[in-house]
Picture 1: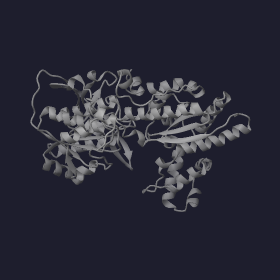
Picture 2: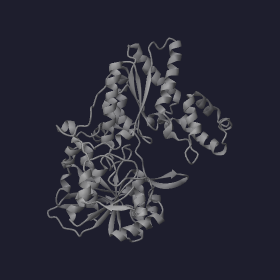
Picture 3: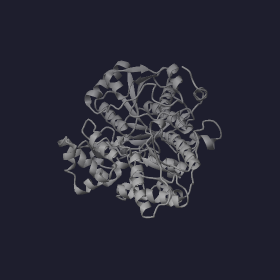
Picture 4: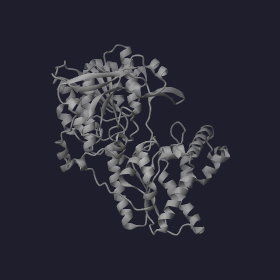
Length: 537
């Protein structure tokens, strides 16, 4: 396999570990915990894993050699930079306990556990993937571990391979499933432990205990580099407005972080749109007014950041989509179905550009629902802003020119070589997960805290997954799930945006972060995200 110069140099990078994980380790247990909400319901569903304490690792006086154990690892859901380092951290952590420990990777995500598809991860294999992006070492998948038949198939292969613990690397749903699995394996007295690791570039798996999910740092730095390049181009050509849609269907953390890094003219935050019950028309007016204000100063260019999930946060669009889903489920003739819309939704539908209106009615998923992820929000806004500016020009309220260009940055950020922060954080999460297994823990998520300090000072331990759960309605049923973290409008990161956005809207205050730096001074190479620094300040 041919490798680039950077790949070769990164292969030699040794990720940093918290002091507590570097030698002999002692476990300290905290107080009993409870779930963030719906305590009785969660307790009833998880009688064996509810109420366990948060645990912390500390430096011990002497190391104990433990018996060799076999462990299985699963990558679940979408890719995130640093997944390979979690696996190399697990591998090294197990070998530090006993050189005869074995690590098996289940192929293609959770389905590998069910279908008994696996490979042993040897030093030779793991060494090829250290500090690299992607999930290609064993592959990932979106199969959900929810049924007892699946759990039982997992028991079969674990018994066959002598596996005593599973580590599931995934987002909120995957870690919820890991906890359900841990509960079932305890109930059945299988002797199989289950540990989770927090992954998602969307940044919505965080809470009082989990400071950040891995991959968020790298993905935001990749997007911010490209946004900065576009800003430099916009400021050079001085004739385009760039509408940039960014990943983040359920929360706007990526758009907010990239805005804090690059200072665009406008950054829309879905959670604010929902809280203020803003209409699509109001969003378009706000953008058009900002375009007109810059045009009055002779600046016919700008940059706007848009979260991927915006459409679903606009109350009137949410109602329209729900009505369309309902009507089209019972009526295949689109025109007849449209006649059933309420007057308010009919007016919203009529305001949409023709191409977007078609996407809402023609592109359906297998369940007959609108495929919201396919709606090109950036193009929708460009068309509607263009129409609004034409009306403003006729009224003498707009004196400039408007030319909009749309972009979507998504997959570009998911498999980048991890930043130093993610390389260190992920390696620590994996090494730490091995220690949780050695300590006999199950139903825990690997926990690394104090992440704005140097890695040496990070705090390692584990948090019970049940502590992060509440009950939510999913597909018509109440289910236990890890509560998603949305952008908090009272949180420090959003307040930082709110404080500056009037200035950024009018002025050209762009910041050009440039590419991720792996070698050089720490202040250039090891900085965590602005979000993390503001939240932990």
